[in-house]
Length: 166
Image 1 (cartoon, helix red, strand yellow):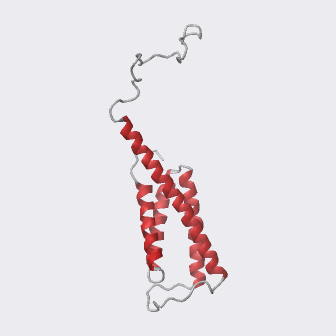
Image 2 (cartoon, rainbow, N blue to C red):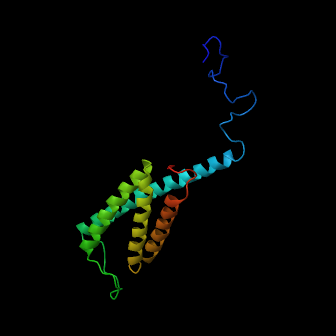
Image 3 (spheres, one colour):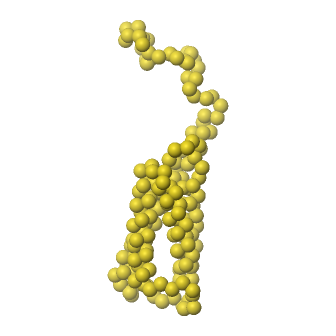
């Protein structure tokens, strides 16, 4: 490496693979921008899925606390012959625990943990199945959440360009 007096102003001292007027050889010329745009989209989708997981967790925690604290917020559904029956107390505990777990998984997605993406996708499948079970009681809300969980699954399992990327 050369001394500071021998270097030209604005250079780092290393000229390996660099000619004036040309890009460094470490960067491929063809397709570089497409890969970076794809990477940005994947990171954006993963961040959106993490935000939705955090919000879904907070919502489930709130619903669980309301179901456990008072019986007059929820009414009996006319679907009395429905196969899946839960007591309000059991449903409240299930929502509370699921909300805490999905909130923690959403936080781990933001921390960049690779296992959190897989775990979050599994939790989204469980959440979609749970909303399917609540379909007769809250049909519009359940359909909306099933679609939301579908987006979370897609965003978390979207293929990455390189192994080990977030």
